[in-house]
Amino acid sequence: MTGLLLAATTTAPPNPASWIALAVLGWLALYAALCALWPYRAHGHCNGTGKLRSPGGKSWRGCRGCAGTGQKVRAGRRLWDAMTSRADTTTRKKR
Image (cartoon, rainbow, N blue to C red; front, side, top):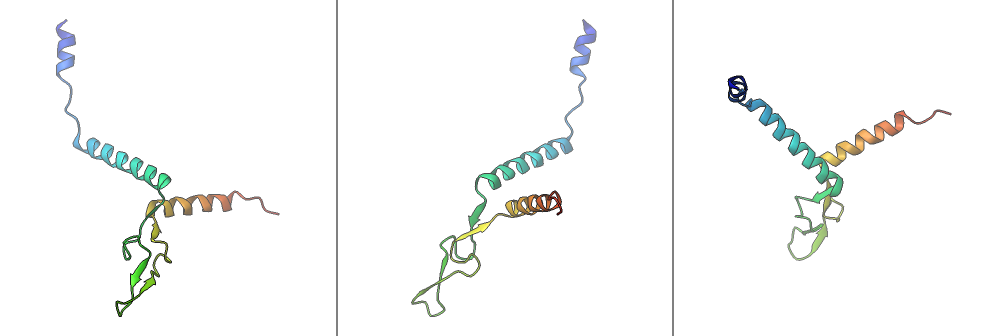
């Protein structure tokens, strides 16, 4: 009986590096889900409106960075699209 108590009480403390690695993996999983569900984010220059004030300040003009949509593709989604398009081109049959 004392062997079981001794084995239960002498466990090593958790390694901080493993907690950090687990947190990073969790963040990556959440970011991957975010990129899959919402591939676009608000464009920073126009704050997601798609338009900017003209230099004179009297009229509006379209944002050139997002082409007037107010949205920009997330970096993770851009990386995913690049990886999948490369995989599609390498597995295509040659004629």
